[in-house]
Image 1 (cartoon, rainbow, N blue to C red):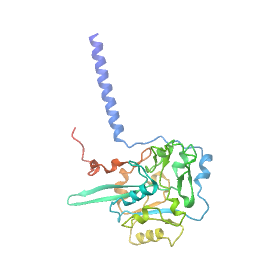
Image 2 (cartoon, one colour; image 1 turned 90 degrees about the vertical axis):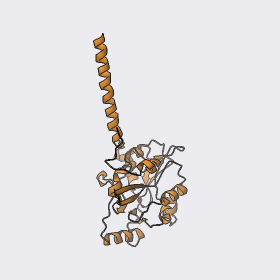
Image 3 (cartoon, rainbow, N blue to C red; image 1 turned 90 degrees about the horizontal axis):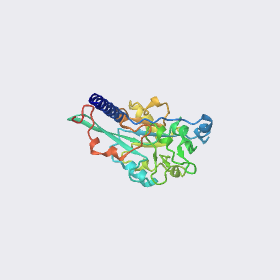
Image 4 (cartoon, helix red, strand yellow; image 1 turned 30 degrees about the vertical axis):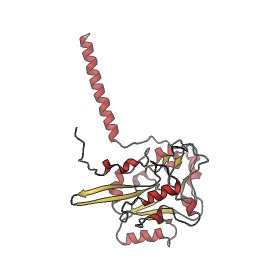
Length: 273
């Protein structure tokens, strides 16, 4: 009997250790959702943008952004975003070693992908492309299933805690359809955000991207390996430095990004055991 008890204790001890090790390993991994797309016949038509001749896109010049968060505030005010939720978020990171240090900023929002995985995943048929190829939510259809959250590779969608429906950047289409820019663009004091028609060579966004390239800047997209063909282009080193901190599938922007515990991040900074 004593031997059986000892064996049982040994088994429990090893089992507990294995569970703890597994939990620690899972905690160290970014949240990844098991995304299941709907049949192509269900989403093919909604993936096609209206034939209006426009192709709305974004250019984010991270070299100019100094992290004032005015874009976030204007977005929240314009779209009545509740506390703790974000349509747009500026993610930052400290780089370098004292005395040569810098804080980089990466303004993030929906990438309005050409091959939008959120449209493919939605079982309600609520996500679709509207004017200029903007990826938007039809609130007459959305049931808050959250498959779009699981599918978005950029963490750009959240479920409203009251309405229980998906919320994301829609390019402020209530403004753009009246000839205005999204609320965040004119609010940005450093002119780091550009929005407009990529098909118009005279648009401010096209001119800004051309000027950046003429100065030797390489324009990049975030997570090209996802093959979503995002319509947001970035200039500067922030996308490469901060990419690992941008939410992924199954995640959304969070107020935790502003926690003081995030002020200093370094691979060698580990808590004492």
